Image 1 (tube, rainbow, N blue to C red):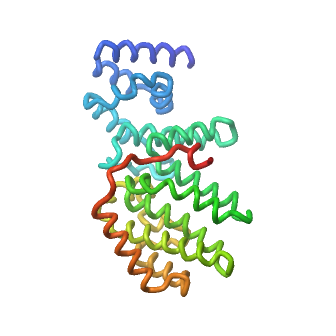
Image 2 (image 1 turned 180 degrees about the horizontal axis):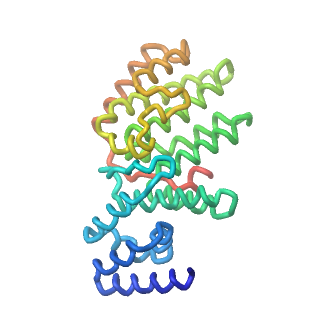
Image 3 (image 1 turned 90 degrees about the vertical axis):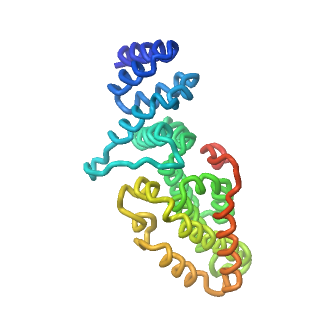
Amino acid sequence: MLFFKNKQFKAVVGHLEKGEHKEAAALMLKWQSAYVAIFQQQFPEHKQTLRHADFDEFWQTRREGLRLSTSPSFRFQRQPSLNDADFVTGYIYYLMALKNKDSNRYEEYLALAINHGSLHAVQTVIHSLIMANNKQSDYATNLSNQLLPLDKFAERYGTPGYLLLANGYLHVAISTVDKPEAAAQNSAAFSYVWKNLQLAHLAEEDSTAAIHNTYFGKGLEASNSFKIGSVNKMLEQCRQLAGDAFPLAMQNYVKNQAVREYQAPEDDAYGQTISEYNG
């Protein structure tokens, strides 16, 4: 297998160096998914070439070829905000991470998945932070610090990205309830939950493909442990949980802030590497 990989990789490199994109794509279509990702890692100088328009059909075919063992009829859709090359590569690395969860390659593959824009990988990291640190005294502060750099990542994914942040901040908020010394932190956490839920609501029509891909066709019910399938119902749940910690005036202020932000997003780079939000 190693001989095959080296031989095939060299053949593709040869085609790419000669500008023979059609021939390179034809060879790569025969590869296992993992090889498509590993090739880009081993030959980063050709990564941008593989994102040339000549390879659009290749990446579309690879995306449509991705399967879920639990739902054979499911197909990933094209996301306007994330090209197929990065979506496919990120998802492959995410799967490779899951298959190597008990090895030292796990974090490496997660980092590579995130660097290619995989929201599934970011979800995995945030979930692990929530589960691993929820008994530590500085849990709320640590989790908040991990979530803050992810705004641009969330913006790129729209509704699923905003819901991921809302869920994370909800854990911060719940962990600081009934702690007088953390009243300000509790109120701030609920404001972030509210803001991201409002953004999720505003982005919903523009996030159809991202919602489909992130939750594997199961809709928003798969986005939260409460199985709530409506962002409006999530907002109502947040309002009830916050109580006096997040008064109506603040709710309206944060909602208006979200509307302004969604209508005029900053032109900035997205994404953070796993090392950046693991410290």
